[in-house]
Image (cartoon, rainbow, N blue to C red):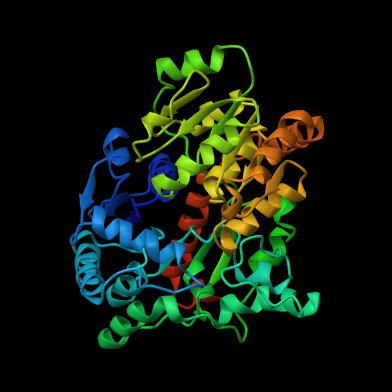
Length: 432
């Protein structure tokens, strides 16, 4: 039995685990979903899948604290969870693995599973690292950040700053303190670096080699030699993996999209409501009509004749019908825009998001801005550029063709099946 554990505090991680579960089911492989819940757990119910709710529950307070921990990485490094939450979650997950006879756990940023999989003695697979992975760092393919957690001194030579961007993720450990305290109590393998938190025994690389710039053969052959990673870490390409929510576009959104005039889709997930309130006016000032995907935030008061606010939307259906988008930098949103041929402004919060947006930027279909510029004239000017310059749309169309026909969920399922088979044949086979 393969157990998938989404962190339902994130739309992308919830949708990814759903997609992989369906692909495994289509191949006749027993798989189940378990989660501590969260703001997007209702999507599991809407999808009609049976899932197990684990203790402790990821209630709104815990989900908010986790989001604050993610957003603070590299700045004040506040903990993701309390030690008590980690202990309870690890116990519940390990007990669940034993009860269903789990042979592999697959996570969508469900961090306590790094420990519970070790307690249960089963391998771990992960997709949440996206492209922000050791082989990419080793080839110096990370961009210089537009939103560094701590500004680098201007007196530093450019080559020094570039070196730091590619080495710091292997050195940072502060965000892992709580997880590693509990790992030490349990006598299981600790996480040696922030970069290790992006990987697993099987690390699913959810991008195309042509976009990332590393061949499939190189990725398969990569090994964590002398790095601050689990020695068992392996990489396998899966390809783009983004949400295709099984829900229609609401009628009032259909009418808005069908009306005359360009529409800019503002859909930043995993942000706070005040951020949306400052962002929307800056986008609106570019002169287009604005469709806001507010997800879990109630910002209906922003509505006007040229602004429509809706909750969680099927982005894969909306994106192809808008002139441009404004998103953060999560790989799910970025890849939806790339697959839809939609140019966008991306506002990355941290290194993983910086890379996601930069990959599209390198293709000529996106612009990167710091989230600090969300309410400024720089945002308005960036949106105007996307709407006025045909090159962005042309580049986005080329990217759409590259993604066409690629089934990332199916490729992820095949990689998981092959890895599980190798592990069954010999525990050493998975790390060969």
